[in-house]
Amino acid sequence: DAGVIQSPRHEVTEMGQEVTLRCKPISGHDYLFWYRQTMMRGLELLIYFNNNVPIDDSGMPEDRFSAKMPNASFSTLKIQPSEPRDSAVYFCASSLSLAGSQETQYFGPGTRLLVL
Amino acid sequence: GNSVTQMEGPVTLSEEAFLTINCTYTATGYPSLFWYVQYPGEGLQLLLKATKADDKGSNKGFEATYRKETTSFHLEKGSVQVSDSAVYFCALSPLLTGGFKTIFGAGTRLFVKA
Image (cartoon, rainbow over all chains, first blue to last red; front, side, top):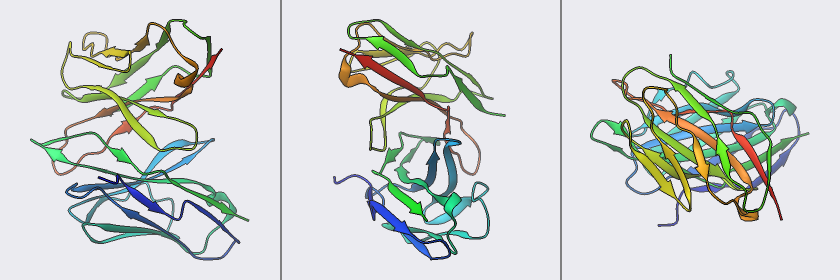
């Protein structure tokens, strides 16, 4: 398996622009997570999906952030408009639920976002 | 609520030194416990895990034992290598009705000098 795939790997944009991050989870995994990592705040869970349905979006910082999962093999995280404080590494992860408990999360390589 | 506390870094060791990174947790019920490792420029990857009390997870010379009485899951390695330099995250996965999410610690950066 190719693992979790994220694109782009690097993104540099200007303040006010729309940014779309993409993720392809591991085939067969029923959970998908979006995280943000910064030096100041560490690893933060933004939102997660189960079977393509958003379950908990309490970590989404504000309305400028939105996430979708139109099918089991694709998810997007959109920031509109972007701001310099959104600069971070964004990770997508997927996992499989077995017997009512969560198994290991598999992380993608991340998208490094810089908003100027 | 559920939380994970791990020792602050950075931790700097010489090659072949003994490593301990402390991790304690607060949780209801019986969570699964994990150690993830993040190498420079990469995403997190599972290092080891334990799913019940007294279980020992091990991988690549690293070990951690699920201690329910002390609510701890300390990471140890007998002889570190330069290639072990990375950030280590302790995490727990609670079992919640209707959905669940892994709680990660803040991470501990390890530098190993040759």
